[in-house]
Amino acid sequence: MSTVTLIDYGAGNLRSLRAAFERVGAAVEVAAGADNVDAAERLVLPGVGAAAPAMAALRTRGLDAAIRRSQAPLLGVCLGMQLLFERSAEGNVECLGLLPGQVVAIDWAARVPHMGWNDVAGEQGSAVCYFAHSFAVDCEPALVAGRTPIDDRQVPTVVRRGRLSGVQFHPEKSAADGRRMLEAWLAA
Amino acid sequence: MLRRRVIPCLDVRGGRLVKGINFESLRDCGDPVDAAGRYAAQGADEIVWLNISAGEEDWRALLGAVERAAETVDVPLCVGGGIADPEQARQLLLAGADKISINTAPLDRPALIAELAARFGSQCVVVAIDAARRNGYGDGSWEAHASAGRRPTGRDAVEWAGEAARLGAGELLVTSIDSDGTGQGYDLELLAAICAAVRVPVIASGGAGGPADIARALQTGASAALAASIFHDGVHPIDEVKREVAACGLPVRI
Image 1 (tube, rainbow over the protein chains, first blue to last red):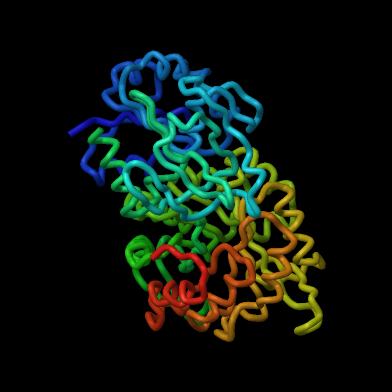
Image 2 (cartoon, rainbow over the protein chains, first blue to last red):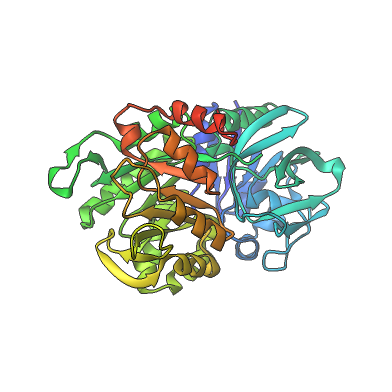
């Protein structure tokens, strides 16, 4: 079974993600430095908190460059997905720029943060997953593998291109549907 | 469509699940991690742990229980009770809590909300508001109370809700002191007033006697409803509550 390397840039707790991958049979390592990222078989970029401090933490540790040069499959989770794009309006910060697109404030919704369980509909069928975020990705349709309705707008919540994947929801907190998402990513 | 959430609340003391009518008659009811896992398996959309002890040893036991929960419970966990500073919040989040709920500390020092939101993100900052009616029903005025409802603060609860949201709370957990423990239903006027005053999600709390009460609370515009005894007594399982909410035309995860 695959070994999954969680990128630790001090964004907080990795315990839930680690446990979720272990429940689906993956071996899990934690990468705190660029060397660990270079050697990884599969990478996960977690994210909790805000875009600007997260990018600063990645840069301080040299992890941004390591993520860019890696050829390993990478899954960004929540803020980790947003960081894959060019820019975030959250702190107006330049992100990793691995995928074309922007991160914008969810300013059209009746209630923000977008908090709770919502549909994810896409090429792998439909699921109901747990979200907790105030910003969302705005990108070209070719990247979008799953969408979620936030009030009257369909927002990209699963993105994919080549080795890069991202999910806006928290698969580790999304019960059986989240587990299936992680299994699908490990099998891809 | 975003689902309305149904949330069981568990009292935790020293890392153990406790139940009781008052603090003097608490019974040890086992491992809160097991209970959280059972509720998650039954369809709970989120779990809230309310820490009801203040001792240092109990705090470490709580952190240990949160760590174990993070490893086994695959729905979000919110932990509240006695959190007074960013360091305690950090310890809980590092242990694996998804959100932390604060209540008395921000009433004494509102800037705490902004500090936590800046450091950890609004999505994990829940401000709990215990509100009591000033002049009985129909008056439309509630006062925010601190210290588990024992200390009136003079603050208008609806205004405090607005201020908490402006300072960066990602969610408000609104408990009616008048309704709590009665089983006679939530304070629907309070919920409607706060839902209208803020744009962040509101969790209804206090007074659930059965599934119909939860459906009514969610019809006020609340994003989630929290209850304790109706779940713990096993009389109304979570799926029964969700079927009732769905029958009222509100979206739930079943």
